[in-house]
Structure formats: C-alpha cells, structure tokens
Amino acid sequence: MTRKEIWVLSSHNHGKIKELKDILEPYGVGLSSAAEMSLPEPEETEKTFVGNAILKAEAARDETGMVCLADDSGLCVDALGGDPGVLSARWGGEARDFDLAMRRVHEALEALETNDRTARFVCVIALARPDGSVRDHVGEIVGSIVWPPRGDDGFGYDAIFQPEGHNRTFAEMSRDEKRALSHRGRALASLVSEEFG
Image 1 (cartoon, rainbow, N blue to C red):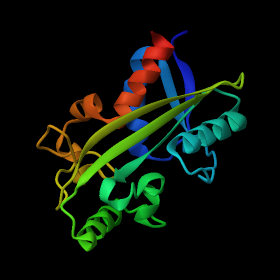
Image 2 (tube, rainbow, N blue to C red):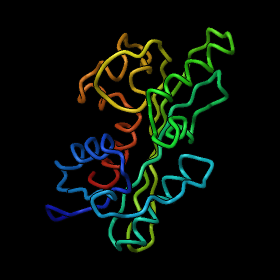
Image 3 (tube, rainbow, N blue to C red):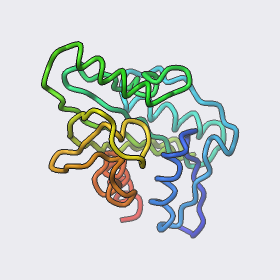
Image 4 (tube, helix red, strand yellow):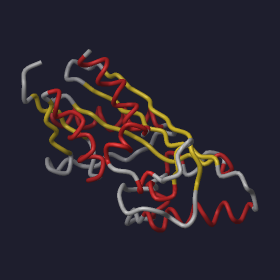
C-alpha cells in the first residue's frame, strides 16, 4: 500500500472518527469521514451489529467509489436481554444524548431489582472495497455497569462501563489504555492484522 491512501469512514461520530484516525495513521491510511464528505447517514435497518456495519460501509462505498470503513457497536446488558444493543445510540433520543441513555440503562436495571450488572461492549467493523468485497471484524469486551457515571474522557456509555478485571470505567482511562482493551480496539486489531500483516 502506498502512503497516504485515503479511506472513507462512514460515521458522523467525532469520538469514533478520532479513535480510528489515530489507529490507522501509522499504516499510511488517512480517513475522510462521512461528515466531512457530507454523505447521508443510511438508516440502520438491520437487526445485528454485523448487518448494520456492512450496510453503512457499502452505502458509503456506493456513494464514493472508495474503500469504506464502517462500524456498528453498542452496549449489551445481560439483565436487559442484550439491550440497548443495536439501538444503543437511539436510547439517547433524537439528539443522541448519552447522559439520557446512561440514565435509561440505570433506571431499567433498578426497575428489575437485580444485582446482575454484567454487560459487554460489542463492535463490528466492516471494510467495503470498490471491487465489491466486504470483510467484517468483531471485537468484544465484558464488564459491568456502574452508577453513578465516572470519568470525563471517552464517549457514549464509557462512564458507566467498567471492564472486567479493572477498577476504573473506560471514561476514567487514557485513550491509549482504553484502546488496548476496548471492543473497537480489538475489532481494529483484527482488521489491521488482516490488512497490513
């Protein structure tokens, strides 16, 4: 691969954009986001992370004719039957307010009167190429839900997710610490291993 190859990241989420840019830059890949290219956000109509990641990657590829990367990720809480799952962003309402989304998770668990706080973050990254090929990579990390939220870094549900074997939430960790553990970091490690050896 030549240096400065540009891929399109099918995302309007600034946290994801920053994280993926940092990881791919050492491999000579620059990212141009869907937001920067004014690409529409396709409706996520699939019922799985894999389905939605592929849908978004293929939609961006069809719009641009370029190599396109998309992820679909979310928080799956065992006691809530895997919710919010693929609807993780939508739990924050139209504005994708994750303070609201985290509060909804907490309130749903409280309503069940359960001590089970087991949860997992899941991420699927799909890479769609102009030749029509698509590959997906899955990453997952198990942990537990904490309340109240802790930490000022991270995004999404990071402030209420404490990875198994650790005493800090993702939002209390540095970007490098989180990346080494996270679902997205694991999915990206799989992609990097396959793409760049």
